[in-house]
Length: 328
Image (cartoon, rainbow, N blue to C red):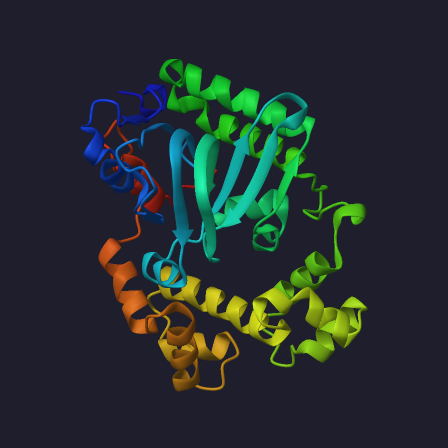
């Protein structure tokens, strides 16, 4: 059978037919492989529905769920090794909203009722249109193009049962182009000048120079063109620019631990500009709550492979995301 002619992989999940007292735990089993999900105030009143479509290079989910708190903690990031980019799309018309979350960075959605779409995109695919997508972590914008994206994704989910895998590459590329337009980046993957704040410019500079041993607050301030006091203010919430630089190097190191099992931990420490393996290990444990060897062991036990997607059970969405390695 021609694999390209096969139907797109689709998964559906709903709590409607589950006993009220068990609905939240069932929802947590369905998506909790990606987040720490904390109990809502009204557990028995919880309900949730999700439809997911595997487009080969990315995963599209449409979700509607009652309020709960979703969190990606540093420890979860270290142990699951996921570094995909999550695009959220919600609303309609002139008020369509697009958000960006980097799975390699901590974030929390407190008391969040889910209604809309999420797209899980491997970092290297997102980077084609967005440059360094990590600098957009926490980004959100509402505009008519976001509303157009929401309408388009509604159509994709509705017609997915009639689509084949043959055109999924083009479909996924179209989705990414629409998201790039809604976020407002230009052809070079940079935000327009009017929207590129000093914080974004400094973040871009730091990301591009993580391998530079001389990278420090003075160098960032000088090359970005801001004073030390202004720079400190930009990164105050992260504990200062020095701590931010270290956190980004640790995120880089965590990706290397997961992606290249041939690299020794001492090699990773040197590549990511730590003075020694012991210095790196102490910093990694302090930041992620787990030592580098434990993070690597966790990634090896999961395996890294491209899945053969299928219609599945409540945990299909999480499984797809954990094993997403396909390219466009």
